[in-house]
Image (cartoon, rainbow, N blue to C red; front, side, top):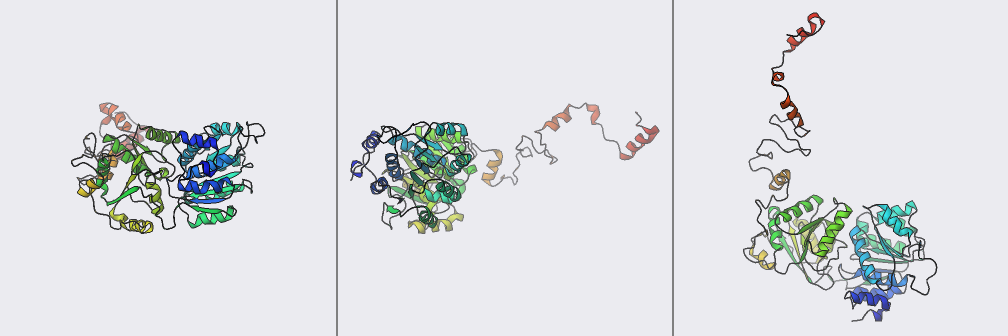
Length: 492
């Protein structure tokens, strides 16, 4: 195995990597670093979790000029960035920044992250003080560019990380606008796990005679071989129990569970918390600060289960993720690859479990065929099935919770969510035993079917009236006679 020194990496960067236990390059790094150091445009393709970040990060940090270099000229304060890295998600941008910070331990370079969902002021302050490398998402980068706060005229190196995901998320116009704001003579590197036609078209338009680098043969599988995959045809109501048992499997470490929607991610997280597991959730309904706190807890070990939507399928590089669970069948083969790529990273082994509902069988067969897998007909499996317990090293007799709740299917759910989950009240209706349904604003349907939108306030006011005011209402004719007598109502 070639070491970093033979690839021409700067001794101070090698020292920084050695400090965190990185001593030998991965195949994508070994192939791409010499090309990137030469300043040539490049397209790098490798499976997720195989070291693409440092493949471009090492070369990027070595090619820029920092104050410690003899070639440095000018005042460090207020300088424009020399390198730009575009990422599809905030989480990936933060992860790339962390990796670059590690490599700059002995050759300091100012690296900052730019993304939406947070205030402008801290980012503007960092830019004003001068920065060498900007890592960010296209939306906020373009916003700062249009405001005149971000100057890309001195960019020497441009990197598109997970480019296929950026295009899939609709960022192509933003990406092209940012590329146009950089100098034509820049070096451009494009990295991705997959290369759809849109990426090829983008490369032809904006890259100058790029060299294509692929770390595996063309017939190599996209999924990481060290990840053991299991696929089960599972019933929706039994999935929480299956997950609860997987979380007690022998050797289970950090676990990421993927769901389709934000609502299902939060419901499952609440359910697992009620079962006694240390869980955090990550989805688009959370504020950026909450998302960062959730990831911090997951990385620090305060929580060992992360329930997330596909926002976490890219860029969540957390060590010791032993299990990935697809709670619902992924939309396509690329989503499947990126989800299970959160485990089995950097040469470690991992386990990926996918639940396929009956309605998703056609979709799964397409994924299975596209990836050349051997799970065309997943076995019908339940939380009590012997094959399920044996496959995942779950001890016989394991319960689906660490602490027994009153009703494991209702933990952490609102009354309406409970009814949704059970398909309606078993007594034939979705109202509760009191004959009414809770209103989101605190009110409740009364027995006559009228909704009190003010949370019962109307009823309380009615009860406060004196008893004599509750006498039967007069007939219409009697009221008319009272008005017409002597031209005004007559008191009786």
